[in-house]
Amino acid sequence: MNQPNGRCDLHTHSQASDGMQSPAANVELAKQKGLAAMALTDHDTVAGVAEALRTGEELGIEVVAGVEISTRAGGKDIHVLGYYVDIEDKTFLERLRNLREAREERNHRIIAKLQELGFAINWQEVIEGLGRPLEPDESIGRPHMADVLVSKGYATDMRDAFDRYLAEGKPGFVSVPRVAPEEACRWIREAGGAAVIAHPGLYGDDELVREIIQNSKPDGIEVFHADHDLAEERKYADLALEFGLIQTGGSDYHGVRQGVVFHGDLGSKSVAVGVLQSLQIAARRNRES
Image (cartoon, rainbow, N blue to C red; front, top):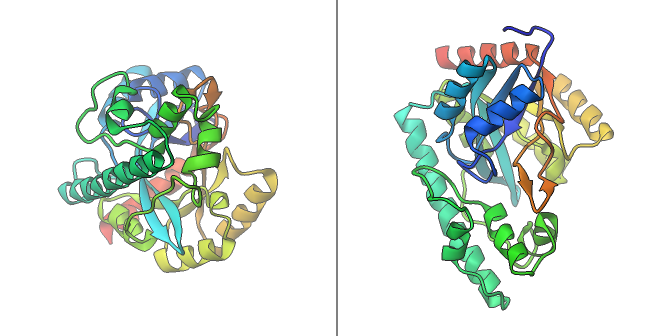
């Protein structure tokens, strides 16, 4: 590690899923922010990781091969982060492909729901909204649909689109069958990575989070996140200590939409680079088990 006292943002998204920038641009921004390392953790895909790794080598910033897997538990969408996964593991790639197929089914059902609400929106407009061709193994998410809602005046911005239509429990929300968190954690371990429960504060159910930890045996939990306040950081740090979990953190950076950074600016939440060593040790242990 070139910067033993440096910081790292372990939760960022690129155009390979629902981020606004290329993987290379994320790495360049991390370098500009003075970070020592960053992880690329796109939803249900590792399509952007190779580009991020190449850019990291060119710029002298460490890039962690990551992913964010969509799961379901306790009637809620739960996300599991994977770090140091083997992006060439064929079994893992096939599992992610199956998740993206479920995601695409969900997307089309969301469009149908929005149409039932009287909104003039279709799938082609969502794709055209990318401003570029959809590359193989990339994934489309709700933020892309939120962009169309905003552009057509149905919502004022991304947050408004989610709060009124796309968030869980809202009229346009759709849930499809997904794997359980324990299965996602197993997949990550089998792909040689370390598994981490993402942004527990967003689920609004700490008993469920505790149950997931007990059932899934993750390597870590995301204590520091753009949507966690100080009280939540302390609470999840205590939970990490209770279960012997690695305390990770990141901005959940998706770029700028309608002039608003979503969730947080890259580097706005970070952890010491020493956390990477803990994740590497966990990943190595998982590979050897």
